[in-house]
Image 1 (cartoon, rainbow, N blue to C red):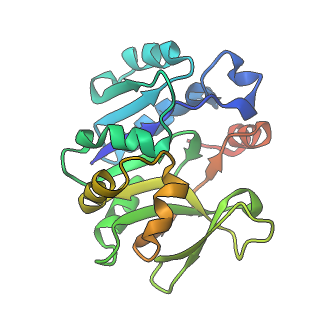
Image 2: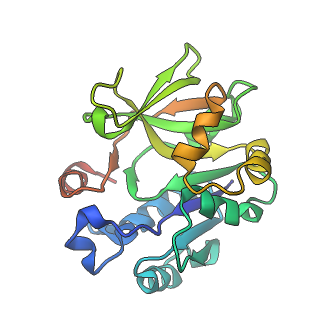
Length: 232
């Protein structure tokens, strides 16, 4: 299964660390974040990969060119950021008409990706997307999910003060081939996947909840937590 890793962000909340290093290459216990993603996904049988770049793109290019995964990675440089949906739309051909992963690679995840793929294969037949979900200690800072008894999304609560629960969207998705065709046909002008695409598919999004460590390392506090708790 092919995977698009969104890795072009500037990481402004992690400054000054990201003044000189792109967020996708910040080290977790000495290992660049992007390398952790590529390593864990490859071991789960996922690949090849497309990585979009923008901020300090030359560093990402150098990292990939010298990594063990260089022959499995294609890069897509964005002179101007397209947005999460815009990048997906610009690269739909990458998936070659098959199901594929869309990953916000600025998170740190020790999830079982083989189990994630298996959950997607066993999803309810009406579901076009499988979303990775995790329990968060800070639900007001996340997109919180409401599910039915089968684990299908029935509602989103995006960064509200008192959300109904703590099950959060991990922004790691498996998109069915049918879903990718719909995006090409009906969402060709949108930019943001979370706000402009996902809400249209409530009732058609299956969830896989990981109990493994899952962190948005976008703040200094969460980055410190990843380096303290994140065993590989």
